[in-house]
Length: 61
Image 1 (cartoon, rainbow, N blue to C red):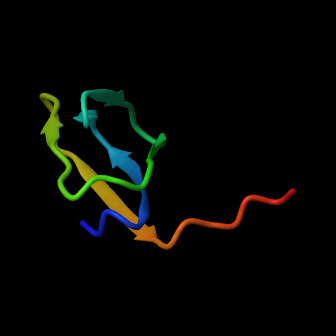
Image 2: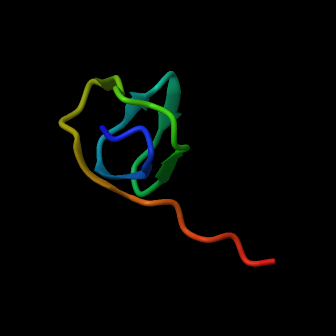
């Protein structure tokens, strides 16, 4: 992971813990810039997730 990027993880099926944060199905988990690694722990069901990331979006004033 690029620590300059912000990331989002969309959990499509199952449940998981991402960076010690519990994420449920159809929930978007936001990961702030600054991490170069991320830990995923799947729940008891199969997990399918989408990881997206890029330069942080500008914050409107």
